Image (cartoon, rainbow over all chains, first blue to last red; front, side, top):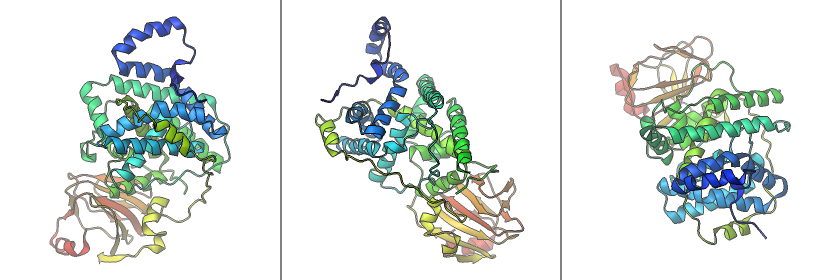
Length: 216
Length: 217
């Protein structure tokens, strides 16, 4: 039997009284609840993708599906897709995630980031009907030891970025969101977004340097 | 392809965000993807803008999937995930995304003369912007021109100088309508560039203006 209930974010050890305190606030503001949950959940999502890669774990897939598919669908509809089409693409994105789990690198992306890039590529193919040249793949190096600390740091940085977006002044946040919903041309995208950019870049830059070094 | 070590001129944040969002015209996508293939600095910065995209997606109101969606998904899963494909590292001067458009490296380019020793090949893309390869003999110049829109010029071999700076291999110049410039290829190697624009260039002298309809610049 598959456990289809999306319990991931909540089954991380949180004392009962903390959960109880969180509840009324979560009921008032659903977006804030999501942020709180993500906080505990990111490494858990990484573990689910690892479970798919390592032993084709269908329960892990089901939990990822329950959490991410409705968000992919909502994002695509917000970007102008018809609900039926968005449903179909969300299905396709989840199937791609299953097939490409071995390509996911938690030292370089959060699961939300990775799923976003898959969804974006399908959106360009199917909805925008455009061709999107991709950068050359990184050379596939000798299997590096997965560094838990690096992964946790990257996941935390992504978490902080998510919070920073939530805390932007409304007008600025709406501009960032519009850029990703496809409502701005490149000329309309602001050079200064107000986002605290740089930490994720520096971390990934180091990871790339290490990878390049390992290839030599 | 090995990343270039001494790139000084990078992509702008708005181009990287547009590429991460997937909203650039195809011609710009090609120049961005080609530069990132050579530049780990911009590759890392792109990853950050993709992380922004992921967070925007997670903030957007979710929309319930159909009741049978998960069953359909589970039924469609294959038993064995895809094999990892090991790709040989490319030789030559064109990173993979560009080589895919040309159908090979520099020897596969079908050059057309456009005057002054300059040669070009326009690459087929959708209509939002155009992209071409330019071959400028060492020491030669591209006619003085301004821009109505945005022009991206990525150096793939050699180097050029204009009124703003020197651009070496791997560097990208992002020029808007405020810039009137006359790029001159440095002595030494002939300069090969990938240039994209979302509006026709404006030539400031009579002759190139006359030739413009014929060379499709």
